Image (tube, rainbow, N blue to C red; front, top):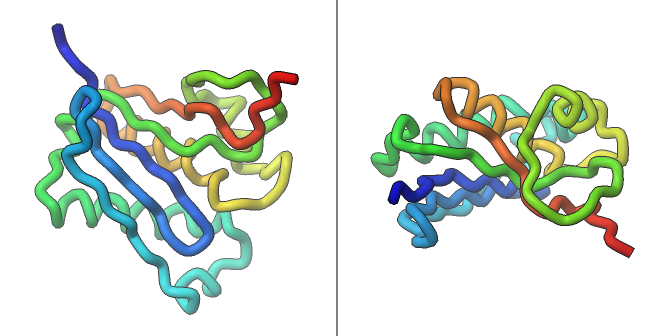
Length: 138
């Protein structure tokens, strides 16, 4: 049986946490801290997208993580319209909503977009979000 090797991305207001899981085991994790002065260069939080993606990729390279070995990319779910809890594949409609910040501006909106972009670089790899902050099951 083949187990997934996942990159998990959790963008926050002043840091981006990443981890690599091989099956259920964490094989790498790091908190990438972003200097306030660096973040202030961007008008909107979403404008930090490439800056944070580059920081993630550099961190993986620096720590000898081969992104080509990944079988899936997971981003922290952003401020989407309320949905049920679960795992969702990132697609064009979701990307449009995350980019437009339909439910507000927050760094978590970057998770699915960065995950999708990295997955696209790898070809046959999918991007997901899991239990986004907007889960509503009442």
